[in-house]
Image (cartoon, rainbow over all chains, first blue to last red):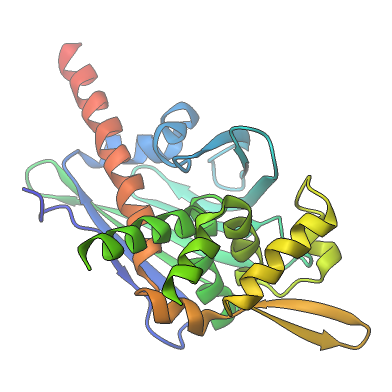
Length: 167
Length: 108
């Protein structure tokens, strides 16, 4: 059972895009709902050790969103925003994504979220993110930024601890 | 040496600094704006990160820019691994949300 729902991430060297693929034991309508409704999104998208706030979220075609991640004990806040190019329930969301913490604007990426029905009431999620440059993509992967500031590095600390423990 | 890098990324402020400059090189001022702590405190963190070779400093005209050194990161771990784990954690929370939705649907 454990190997069934593995997360597959593809980021080929020198490319400006990355792919995330995952299957879920739930019908497509429910998976779409979990992406589309603010109170559900808050339950899974936000990083573990940070608070996530939804500043605005209008998931209709032509709408926009803005999320803010902050440390539980105060400290820096980090905003993310984008516009919804197209939202077609229950199969597709196309939207932009920009991190607001950079000194210059314009490092925007384009996300394609596609949900496909599978037999047995299962659903396949396919995310393609296309970045402005290879450096932007590599930076996003290494900063762990998308999951909230520095969660990627927190994970790295855990991984290193595991490696150290087994050596 | 690896222990030094481990200590470097074990501090949340230093992780936040790395997260920021991994996306784009920054001047000391641009970086300090993100933190409530003094510029000196930020400089101290930068010094440690520089000693571990996770951060490189580059003079560009009158300004100093802090750059992230991805090579060093690739040396200490599979570079995709933290990103992968972040999404795995996120999706297992989503599994839970979907289970709750399914149960709610069955109850009605």
